[in-house]
Length: 372
Image (cartoon, rainbow, N blue to C red; front, side, top):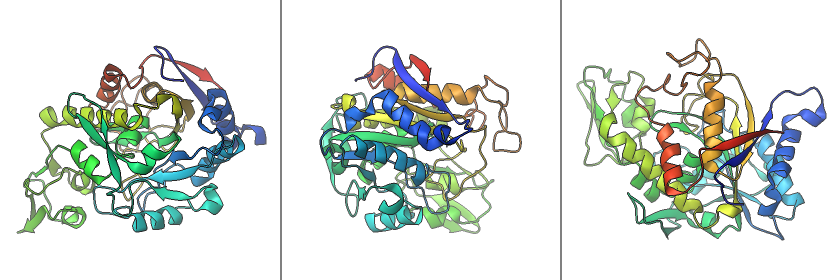
């Protein structure tokens, strides 16, 4: 069913005192309660959109848990496959060969996950199509071919922090995860700069820049804005936080562009797209980072919905109700009710994902949380 004014979000906590209450059982109950069997059909090619994690990261959604979703799709007649797209930045998932190698190293082989892996935008990220959206920033967006050709889509997202987007959940998974590098480049409009006073000359930014935009001289880095593609990897790896952007003017357009891409990924098939969000290991950073920092709040549960806006809003609310972990990357907003992601990155505007997505018709911020 397409998103309604008040959307249903199904929630399962993580308490278990027997085999019928373990995470696999709870995922199965969420699948059935949400009515995701409608995504299966007779031999439907069902795309299970996951994040395989950058090498060095270990907090992506476990293939053991993804297997529970795959098995349910198979039970109802689908022919599921796991999928993701090439990264814009250099790393362990920049092309399909490296991406598949990373997926298998992280346990996503068919023996464990129960489904084959298809990199949705082809060998070098060039297999995509234009989708007409006619929105504020984009007339068309670029979406990976295998995503568009699939009969149905189930986006499986690890809800966590993100230094630019504020947080990443279903919306970000659709936007960045369903677009090829050319589409990611369109979304990453900010350009970065180095504050020389804070730069320690470690050259980590030089190592990760995919375009050779970074140079280091006299133990100080600099970024050529004419070469920078805005991928943000330098921002992520800079330990001294010497790298920045114009947060006041560039952040809102980035988030809005991301939301428009999410809309383009599902606009013609909102009734054939479902969402699982995992509120476990709520780390400060995206799983694109080659590390996993300590969680900022306790593990909370698993959510399912037909509405990407509602499920992300529910996740945000649930995170903010928690007491933040002392000793984590949180520097403030530890108390229940305080905004945890602003406690990580005070310059972010993650909530704009939700309000702008609602404005363009991607979903609703009004939801009913149904415990399963």
